[in-house]
Length: 187
Image (tube, rainbow, N blue to C red; front, side, top):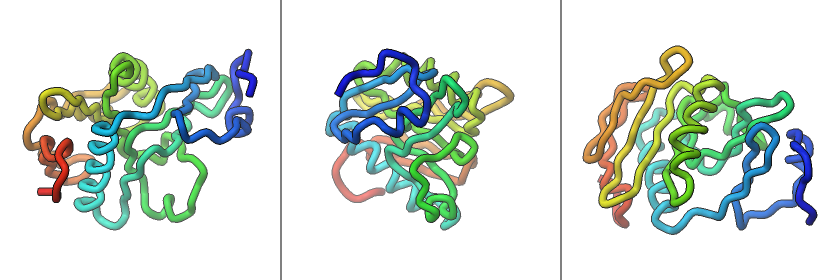
């Protein structure tokens, strides 16, 4: 495959060969390619989606690695959050990708090399696209979350820490954050 030498449109992005060995995103038409996440990152993402699904009512569903169009006009921006929450009715329609207005919550788990992207660029992009809630999950000695709610054009922090996270919005949720990194039944 030859790599693009220009800003891509969504149609050109769609025509790229399938490759599940990496993650592909568009930032204002620029193709960004990153390696797949390491095992602990994947465990946290999987357990978080599972715990969300256990607590969400049947109208909502947590999904992994779904393409989300933030800006469809040229040059487009398309991201692949680690976890998104969208309506079950929409997921039942089996779309190839979602649009920002379809997403209630986007979650990014920090990986080596993704901190600035997740904490700065995606924070700005998700807010500009109007995604109501954004969480950044940090893996270190323990799991911590910065949970944010869109307030106007920027996000306001509604939770920042580890241990037990209790939120009323976007849904009533209680998450034992340390359990996300451990193998075993959910608390």
